[in-house]
Image (cartoon, rainbow, N blue to C red; front, side, top):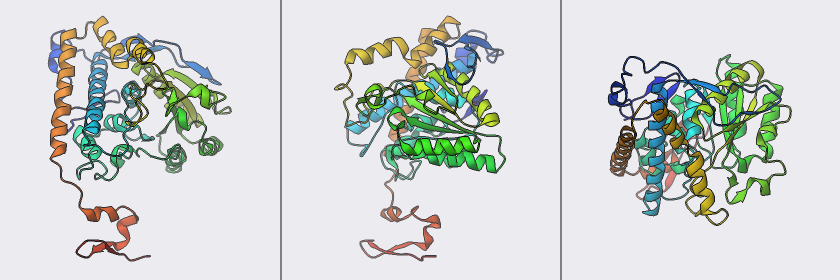
Length: 393
């Protein structure tokens, strides 16, 4: 469903490229790749390393793709909220709206040979890696055509061909797995890196420090990224961690604190981190970001923080509005054209939902597949399909 195009490593998620009108009306059809330099909103804060420049090179094409991709992500998550409340999505569901800048910024700094692994807030990261809206909604609703065959749900999106190694439901469990991916890259002499994502709520996990120690000993090309959205479930970081400066938590590993609501700052930091990891081994990035929804759909998100806090972040730091301002200030599109882009994003999301609703449920026998390698000849028998036979090695 999604047609993928690349712009300096960035990916557009949608069926069509950026509308030609956004370029032709401003004579950008032939110079949409001309560089534009934009300064990050706030400085990078380093630990045991010199920070990258605040001046980020981008292009009209990339800025418009950032806007469009984040508009799709935002609409997808808002729609997922509605589908959950309508009981079309069951189980757990963790939404990413507010954090879209990281997904698009990281993708702009990587190639599809770099690996990504994350926790359970994974919908938008899956899209950024080339997944489609149809596959995403089908998975959310437990349908056969979902990216994990309808068996993973919200927390377990997966796209191995694009080296997206999933969402993981156990807090912090993906960190040693990610360092293992980085080990494989080094062992195979690949010039690629693994981005290992975790939240501030997982930052005190012992397995994180054990994996980081090994990665540092072996100089693995691992970039550990703490997506600090300020709350581990309903607990503020300062209440859960004696030191909430997560970019310093590696001590012997360099770190960098980044404005995770600024897509261009994320892009610059991830590019910087990739160069470092390939030459020197692991580095920690702390992305200072914010989630608009609660921790999950069972959390209203307003019992441990005020509505004024949420609206204040929306007004001052919203990632989509920041890119909108850059686009308008450089006269790359009009306000109307950007609103039309948002309307088109809404339409594409609605179309994907309608198609996903038509996807069939998985066959009950699928309950027993993908448990063992090649399923070990596992078969299901009986009228009620409850008798299972398999051949052990």
